[in-house]
Image 1 (cartoon, rainbow, N blue to C red):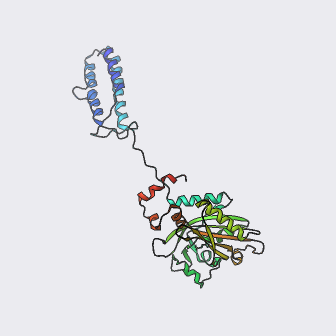
Image 2: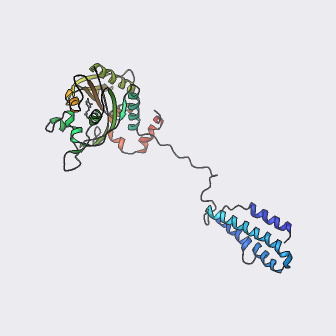
Image 3: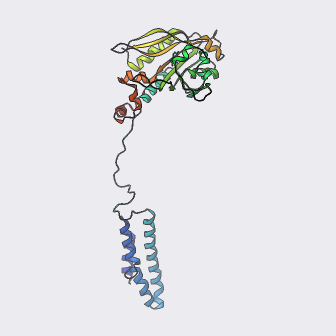
Length: 331
Ligand code: DAH
């Protein structure tokens, strides 16, 4: 029990590192073991030493005892696993890299459309998916007994047929125009729902992008230019489109836009000049202001962009399909 021996022990305690629970247990026994523990023996010997010498030695041995206890407490706190040769969490072991996910193709196309319209000053808004009859139909010039209601087979949420899942994003036009004074240019994208049989071309839920622009002296030519700009931005300069006369209750005149896709013309969106009656419904003076609107299905556009032929694949959650869009992460 001389000073040299004490220093050696102090150093040993200081340098001790436990990798496993067993290491720690052996360390404890080495110093506190009932018969052969170093400190246990020291304390026994201490009693045999003359009182005067005992005091200083006692201080040193108590200090060593505290050092051992501190070490044990430290390793108990960091939680060594019993009977295992590794620490529960070892930050020094090289980790397995986590695979980066990818955006869903529908999200990629939605983000693209938003960017394309932001470039020409459209603001982006969203509307509710649960709507009432007035915003989804009546205010858009689709009265209760109008046959065009049947074009969009509706999910009603209650026995009360006033509350429904919106069948199109044109309802956002009404919500926005009610609250804002023209001029404005607005884009809205979101989910819409129709009670349709699931097939390669249709689903009960899909996404629509809706745009509208109201100002003094807005003309059909402005509409055509904007649609051309959108289609060229999405499909390149060489793509061919045509405007085909059509009918929508909320636009007059109305048109559908078709895109030529090798095998023939594919319908991609509806559009037209907003019917003055719709403007009246939201208290916008239709003598002073005019505007256009357009609406398109995002899934349909994505089919053409990615050359996919079955809409159901978007919602199958098949990782082999979804992985292919990783490189489009920042599109
Ligand atoms: N709401 C129409 C539909 O779901 C699409 C549409 C057509 C929107 C013409 C428009 C429009 O804004 O002007 O079939």
